Length: 169
Image (cartoon, rainbow, N blue to C red):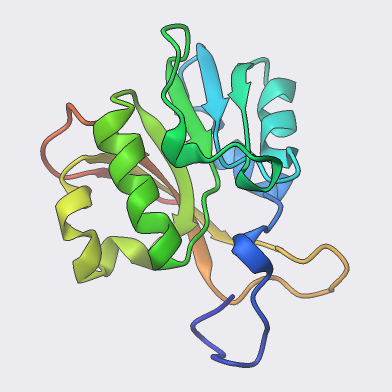
């Protein structure tokens, strides 16, 4: 899962890492109060944390349950997407394309903090309106260690053109 120790840790299939609750307060103040969708829901932890914040979930799905996020489009009542997508580029790239350019509503993605600096993200970063720093998270519940990579919430909107606002910890 980490670029800091290549080959040392096996990746979980389909990047199914439950979103740690610690990640949610960092983005909470930046979210709208409308209905959200969680199209990469995994085991549903992120959805639960967001509902606890009094946000309404209008859609939740995951590929392992037969709901491919790339086949999904938001219903009119869905005002934003909030999800922790797979971080591996072959899975993330088509999701970025779909969420930003096909879904056409604001989307918040929990990603590796370094992706903002990668050349392959260039064509997406002009649609990123905000980056909210999270820091390191504990992705594996039964281990005493945090992850080795920093995370951040990235807010994208197809209407935005320009640089993102950076919100430090």
